[in-house]
Length: 68
Picture (spheres, rainbow, N blue to C red):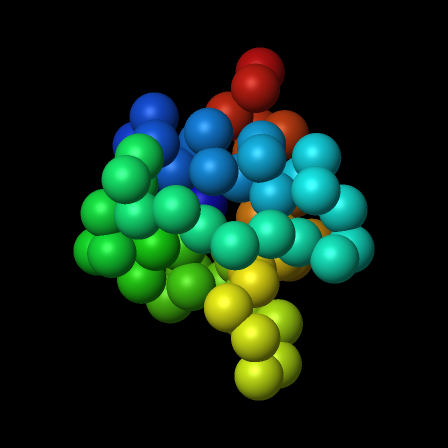
């Protein structure tokens, strides 16, 4: 599992709560680099042809590990 910042953990929690439709990510609370990292490690993904993002199964597993 990749190491996560507080901002990344918070975003994963928000995306998990948003469900299968995901949500638009506000870059006021998280940097583009942090978002890019989450995409790179396949914890989140962009919903096709939209500006919405969803948490992946792998992201959910990482979040469960962080919550321990």
